[in-house]
Length: 440
Image (tube, rainbow, N blue to C red; front, side):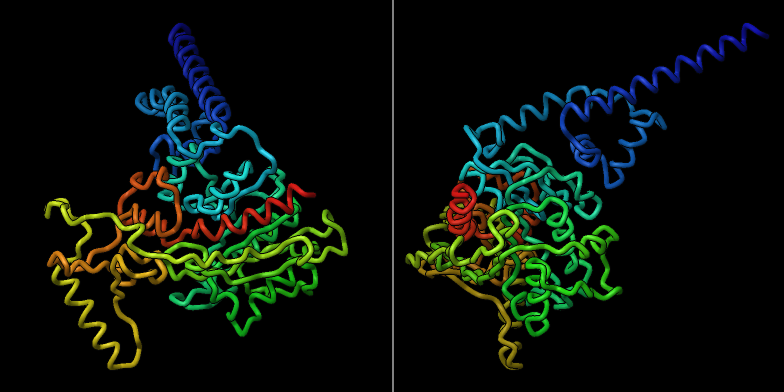
């Protein structure tokens, strides 16, 4: 009987050692690759609960299957290959002159121009798993996930903070609830990071409707929080984390200004308007810093634009391969809706363009649904209008040709470009901001 007891005891001890060794191996491998649990789970193809699974493995609560263990063993090589193939990997940079973080990063539209000017991105956050996939393919890095779950103290120090924070709460297409909407309170996630890390310079981006939201009071609140004049009386019913609410007790001291800029004024064939907010830390640049002395908003190039410059020739595309021409049913629906809306005085409906059009209307995140805001006329080849291709969407937003657009489905990439920024405008701003950073 004692022999059986000892055998069982030895077997249990062996199993415990194996579990502990596996847990240690998984944690060490993840840390060696510089990945958080969420990012590690992403690479392993785990679902939305992947972060909890990884934590369980590392704490020895359970072990991965043999297949998952083999995948972990091959992961380091897989990530190396992805980083090597990523066209905009930091590994390809010769030198860096300043550091920045990329919040609500999307697919990296705000990052690209600053990285091109020798800036190094030291932290990225983006919660959408499909946007993370496109970001990883292009930059060789998986963004950190939900910013609301990341403590400000855990974010690296940086010179410049970039944030195209969610705009649905202020947009024309949304309900315009602003700070009453949880998405609208994402500004307070930015504020708590600024209060903790005190970056020298800020660049925030949002839809132009933010300027007039709630009679201008929402924008006034944002600016006053940044410049330290706000009385910190955000209502208790506005949803935000305890860390964010506590951060509001810390007075910021930024010299700030804002401006609405339009993409077509900077050489992009799109009538896209966005508001940009820029701030300089007076504790770094000097308490008497004058915004106009340290920064000059970029002058629009006002070059002539033509949609034909970014369109692909799909006239020879076989019918079976044509995924962009809309169906008879959808086209008939667009036409009927436009007539009905015109009678009601709404003015909503489809917008038709061709290669001679100087620019299009704004590309939105809903473009994947029916393409109504930007349809390309094909009457010359006796076809219904078509939607833009993913590559055309990339060009419309000013993304370089090397940017990978097929890492996710067509519907997802349409959403991603609709949510992104116009590179032309960010590039113009980045040139001016870099001068301010490097000059100091």
